[in-house]
Structure formats: structure tokens, C-alpha cells
Image (cartoon, rainbow over all chains, first blue to last red; front, side, top):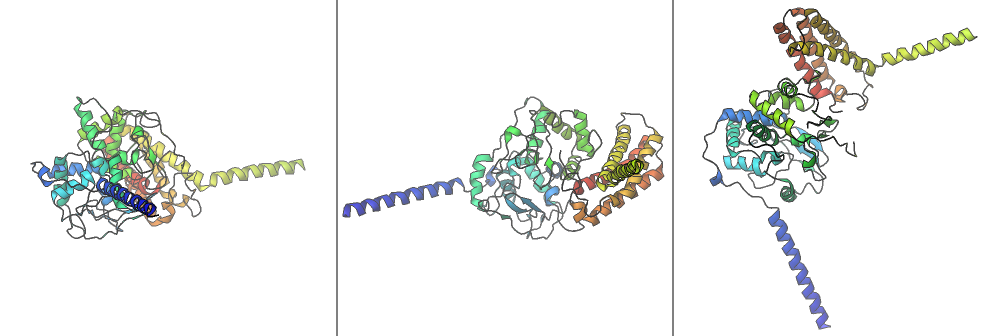
Length: 314
Length: 146
């Protein structure tokens, strides 16, 4: 009898130890890492290039102050609500306001948010903030972007938190998501001797984050890179985001100059216009140097052509 | 009797065809096609894919002008198709914003017609703001995708 109760106690101890080891492993796997200040490159900020990064990323298309009558895209007070399958996201204030925006952040904190999706308080950001694209950005470009953002008006506007469904509301779990999906490597292999293509890939896969809307997502919200830019359900709800690969379902019939003209003016080859959230994106891309738009076009013509796949739910 | 039947049949067919063409969904769709044809004519000139032709440009502007005055009546309550056409529900839930853009469209088109563009430069200056209003309206009030 004594032997059997001692065996039970031993088994219980082993189980507790296994549970503790698993818990510790999970805790370690999901913890955040900070961008060390010592790794910031010696670089003097160039706000003009920062403005180009701001337009490439069309930051204002999500972060502009959501307030009746506000048409100023440089007031980055946030507040827009995005309803998704995972729950309700509220777009934060990224104006340089010290109390309700990001005015109090230092450079390392900003770089950490953009490259690793980690807040100054050491919490994971949800990937609705497209750091899984920004993680491919050069730190120098981020330093320039921060300098530009700091030059914009401070907006005092408190934005509430997200309201997500279980299990997505467990923020720590994003650490596991990052292990699976956060990857600074380029998505598409290209001829790396072609400087325009390299620039186009950098812009499209990094700051311009085209893949965030134009690539379908899997069950956990990660990009399905095998269907890169092949079109996806609209994250805002109704309708669909188009296929922009060189397939006949996408931009196959568009010439390079058609795409460049569209990015500059918003007019398609049949003279219909851009619509939905692409309007703000296009109007930002129109402010890039022409060579950058042409680089994006070269990239869009070089990526693999993929047919659109209709989702079962559509 | 057969005459009565024939007349009834004709009236029935007529009433059906009249009611079909009166359907605001069909009418707005057709009108939008006309607007797009105008955009093709003007766009090809701006892109220098065809030679500038003042009369063709004015015809297109007049089609836009007519549309700008009539569009507002073609989205009556109850004509939201739930996504079967491209009109987004916001046309009805944010009527004030939609009407404001229709007014912008009418104002810009009226100015373009009054300018009577006689060269590419004038046409470009007149059509640019109109295309911007088109985009603005498609941003908030049109469904995207196939």
C-alpha cells in the first residue's frame, strides 16, 4: 500500500516537472526580444527619404485621424476601426504626441516596433500592424522615417484597445505566430544583379507591404507565400483585393507603362479608376520618385504568375 | 377576341420592357458604362494614344455632365443589391457623403464644359479634377474585386 502511494507521488512529481518544463519552454518561445540600442547604425537622419518611406508605406491610409471632417492625412491620430475574423482592431495614434501618440519613443523603441513588432512596454503587437513586411526594411530607412514622423503635428487622441476573440486575445501567443511567420528574408527570388528589381522588391515586400492585402492568409493569418500577390478576400469585409501577379487573372494584360500610369494617376488601362483602400495607397505611391514606381513595376512583372483561387467562404 | 389578345400581349411585353429599363440598377449601370466610354475617349487623348479632338472631348464631357445631374436619383432606398452590382451599402448608409461627391462631380464637370477645351493642355487641366472625384467616390462607395 505504501509502495503504491509513493509511486503515485513520484508520477505526480514527474508530471508537475514536465508541465513546468513545457510552461518554461512556452514562456521562453513567446517572450519578446528588444532591438539593442548598440546595434543602431551611425546614420544621420534624412527626413526627405523618411517622407518617401512614409509614402511608400501609405502610413496615413490607416493611421490618419478618424474624425468627421478630417481630410488632413498628416494628422496621424488613429482611431479607425477594422473588423476582421479575429475581432476588432483599433488603429493607434502614431503622431508625435507624447501622451497619446509615439512622441515619447526613442529610436531603438521605434525600430524595435517596426522590425520585431514589439512595443516599448515589451509586449507583442498584433500583426494587423504589418511588421511582418516592415521587418524587411533597412534600419537607416527607419531612422529617416522616424525623423519625418517627428516633424508632423502632434495629435492628442486616445484610442481604445483591440477587442479580439479567444484565442487571439492572448497576446503572448503572438510569440508563436512570429516564430512561424516573421521572416526578414525576401519572399521572391529575383536576379539580384538588376538594381531596379532589387529596389522594387525592397519597396514592395518591405515598406509598401503589398503582400499584406494582395496575398491570401492561412487560418492563423500568416501570408500564404505560395500564392504571393495572387489576390485575397478584402480584409475590410466586402469585395476582393485583386491578383497583381503577371497571370491573366491579374496584371497579365497590363504593360509596364500601364502599371506605372496606374500607380501615378489611379487610372487603369480601360480608364476605370482605383477604388477602395487602394485609392489612398495609390495617391501615396504617386508621391514617390518615378524611378521607385518603375522599380515596383519591374518587380510586379518579375514575380511568378499565379491564378486566383476562390476561397470556399466566398 | 384574337385582336384583344394580341393587344394585351403587346401591352404586356411593352410594360415588361419598360419596367426592365426603368429599374434604377440597370439604368445606373448603363449610365456608368457611358461615363466609362467618355473616360476612354478623354483618357486616350491624355495618354496621346489618339489625336486630340475637341468635339469628341466635348461629347464625352456632356455625357459626364448629364450623368452628374442624374446619378443621385438612381440609388433610391431599396435599390441596394447586396453586392450583385458594385454599389456599396455606404451609398445608402452615408448618403450625405455620397451626395457631396456627386455635387463635386457636377461642379467639376460644369467647369470643364464651360472651359470648352481646345487643346490637350486645357483638357488635361479640366479632366484631372474630375478623375480625382471619380476615384474619391470609388474609394468609399464602390465594391472592389471581380
